[in-house]
Image (cartoon, rainbow, N blue to C red; front, side, top):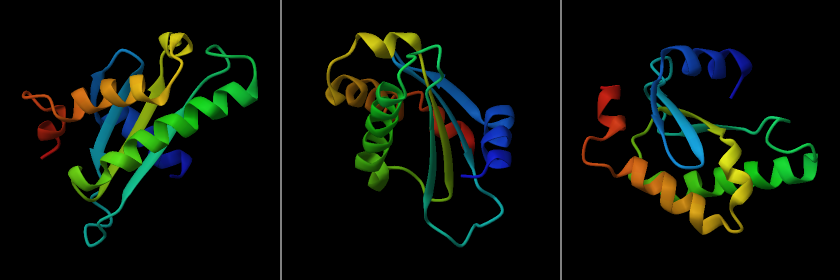
Length: 114
């Protein structure tokens, strides 16, 4: 994702919170013929001073979305911003459960996209 796409998603996308990340989503109306999902994982220096740790969290977040890719609508732009509580987890599974509950919730924040 390009910086302008991230900024547009943060401003105009629908938002939901989980225990460890805040998820912003919007449909990519510019390329409706494509079925790909674009993901940006944001972990600030406030979360962890070590770049190694920040990148680990980013990899975990991207992996969770990659695993859910089949169930998500196409042409989707996602920005996942890590919360400070992400420092308390020890495994990918905790983030996975948190994000999966947001994607599959009955009220469905993804339903607000249409």
